[in-house]
Structure formats: structure tokens, C-alpha cells
Image (cartoon, rainbow, N blue to C red):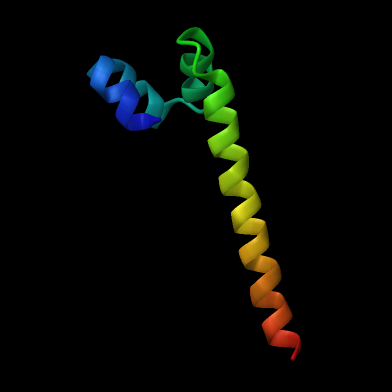
Length: 60
């Protein structure tokens, strides 16, 4: 998402890096909200899955 924001406007790209929640606001204004949430939650789910797999291997 940061790459897309930097491509449109470098100042907004800096806001993306410095202001928490700005990428979400930008995605909502640019109608990328659904795609942004899909990628965000997919990444979070993969991180949780990786943690579960690592935890499972440490128990065995």
C-alpha cells in the first residue's frame, strides 16, 4: 500500500510512514478499502498460522 501511496504523491507517502492509520484512510478515499483489508487480514492470518506451526513444532 505504501508503494501505491508514494506513486500518487510523495508527501502522502511520508504521511503513510509517519501517521498511524493514514494508509487505511487513504485506501478508503481511493476505493481500495476492500482490497487493503483483504491483504491486511490475510497477512495477519498467515502470521498467526506461522506462530501456531512454530509452537506446534516446539511441543513435539
